[in-house]
Length: 79
Image (cartoon, rainbow, N blue to C red; front, side, top):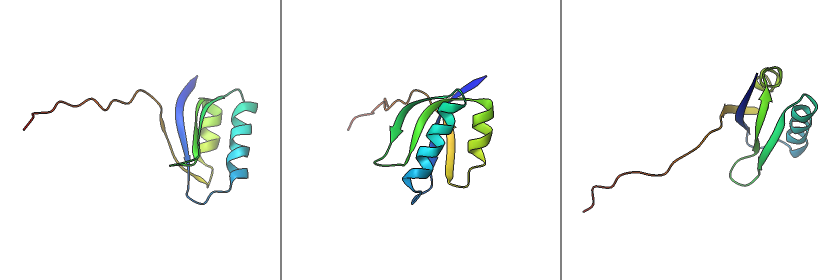
């Protein structure tokens, strides 16, 4: 089974640590779909369960969260 996730690394994590995580994801059957380098350091990916487990124990990973649609639609009552 696999999961679509966003992996965010702790502030100050070296680029080579992120690159190694990306390489590990790809080598183990995952797919990196987007990289984040401006507001956060990390990537979006589809991960097999075994890679999810490995990443979740990585000391440099801040959080792994589900990836999915985001909406900014809100109703306004007007003034």
